[in-house]
Structure formats: structure tokens, C-alpha cells
Length: 251
Image 1 (cartoon, rainbow, N blue to C red):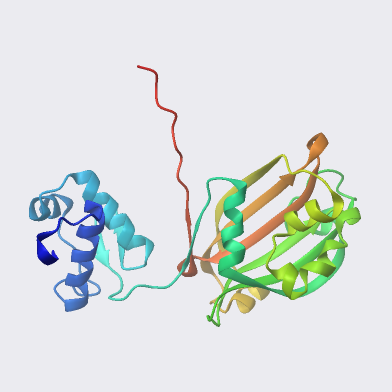
Image 2: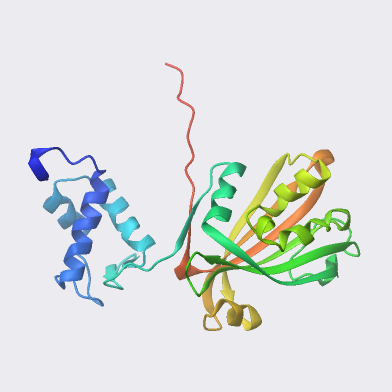
């Protein structure tokens, strides 16, 4: 600590950075294991909770992998770059657009029953679909493959979504702006998935690679789902973070 000033970083971050320095120096080589949680607690004089947060931070950047009964294995001596998305409210989705750019691959008309995901309502109902990729700035590999489905009466916004200005705005916001509707809520489902076939080729990963599937339904007035967005993210390029703030209990 320079000049004797106290270190303001969280304790788990200090522990994580010290362990990562050990990994880079080869003290804990790739393929080997970190000390036990109890040993790390003793070394840094911290709680087990702090150690677990430190290990979780290292796992989030692809440096270690923990498995019950085996311990924490070192999987890499360098941090793997990935997009970390924090989401606490609908407004937080804007950060995703600021951090990434959209590349449109195709526009088409589909019937709900022909979609690869279950769309709400009548299976024979028509939808407009945009297929695209999302890229982090300056990175050649996509961070996500996406299909966006809109009710046909809102499908005209895809014309705007394909230009540079529209690329910087979320589809739901374009619908709100052009058609003067209000989004009441967003339903989200996150599942693990295997990336196969053409999707794997577009994302430049091996078929059968692990990924994260994020399905969002945008609900307007009258409880109508007007947009469905399905994104598939390669596991090593994407991390999803959420913080829940609890109301303080009354005294």
C-alpha cells in the first residue's frame, strides 16, 4: 500500500488479485489446484465468505473452476475477455447496446409454429424476425447470436434497426418511439444450452460448445407480448450479473 494509505478495495478483490498473481507466477500452475478454502482463510485472515467471493471472481474470468469434492482447479493463467452484463432494471439494457454493435444477418416473415423458440399466442400467427450478431468493440468474435421477433404491425422498425443510428438503440425502444406504446414489463428466462449447427458456425465456436440462452418477452399495454428476443452467448465470452437490493426490515 503506497504511502501507508489504507487499501479501499473490497477484501475479496484483494484476495482474488493475490491468488491471480500467484497463478501468473506459476506458484499454482494450470492444471493444479489452489489451496483449500480454510488454508486461504488462514493466509489472508479473512472469512470463508470472502474467500468464496474471491474464487467466484476468478471463476467469472475463466481462471479457475470449482467442483464439489475436487476443489478449485486452475484452468488458465490469463484472464479471458468476456462481456459482463449487469441487469437490475429495464434501463440497464441500454449499457449492452453502448458496449456492443449489432450486425443484421437477415429479415424474414415467420409463422409462430415455425420459430425455433415458443412464441406466445396463436401458433399460426405471423411475426417479423431479425437475425443478427452482437460484437464487442474491436473484437472479431461475436458475443451473441440473436433472433428478434416483432408483431407485424411493428415490423417497420427493423428498417431503422439496420442503419447506424438504429444500431445504437434497442429494438423495444425503437418500437416505443415510432409507435407510441409503453413497455410495462420484461419477462426473462436464462438457461444453459449447447450451441450447435449453423449457430455455432456464426459464433465461431465448436459444435456442442456450452452457451447461455437468454429469452426476453416485452409486454405492452393490455398484457400483449409485442416483442420476443432470443440470444445465445458462448459461455467463455459472456457473463451475466444481477444484484437484488432488499428493502430494510423495520426496526
